[in-house]
Amino acid sequence: MEMREIAQSFEDGGMPGTIGAIDGTFIKIKAPSVDPESYNCRKKFYALQLQIVCDNNMVLTDVLAGWPGSVHDSRVLRNSSLFATSGNKFPGDYHIIGDGGYPLLRWLMTPFRNNGHLLPNQLLFNNTLSSVRQIVERTISLLKGRWRKLSYLNHLCIKLMTKIVMGACVLHNFTLLHDDFDESYFLDDDDDDDDNDNDDDGHDSTCRDRTAELKRQHLSNIIVG
Image 1 (tube, rainbow, N blue to C red):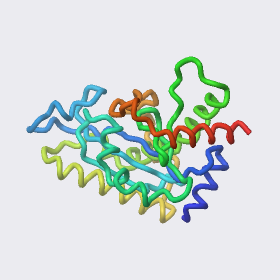
Image 2: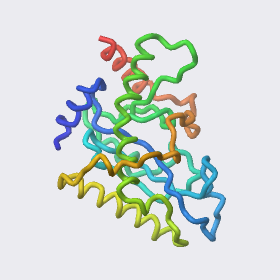
Image 3: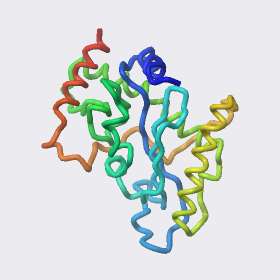
Image 4: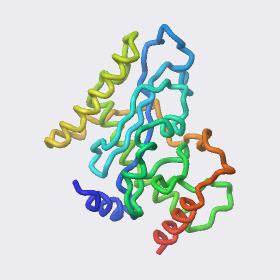
């Protein structure tokens, strides 16, 4: 699907200029024999990090797997090829959307931090973004629900487990692109993840992206009409 068609679909949902949604999820694993504590995630189990970006049809457009579960989403992003090549991936005013666990960037729109004093248009922006980004939560639910092996990887080799995760992501796209889909594939309850991620703890608030802040404010004005 062409970028402008994806953007139009997201705009119809209320978020202009959007071509994808990003999120991270934990893949439960057996405790590794080397440095196991680095894989102990905030949910108190051993895990690999999986970062995905999806389009409006739940097709994965970018995937990174293998970082230890204790690593914050923002750090995973900053060490990804998506971050390194972002200058070429988001022409014009296109962007993806994410939750507050990610840094606000020109190409990544995140919610306004709610300090209890947000303006009505900022609150509406946050609510709209939260609603539209549910597509990535559904994508994770579909991925884990269809490929139940991802519920727990009982292997010792991190490289092998990473390959299994990446293989499931390839199969996820293959089945969607060949119209093999059913609502029953969705995971009933994925309590490994939540919507209340902490603010980007890898981001220095004194080094904010002013261009991104102005863009977000402009988008909030457009959304409120």
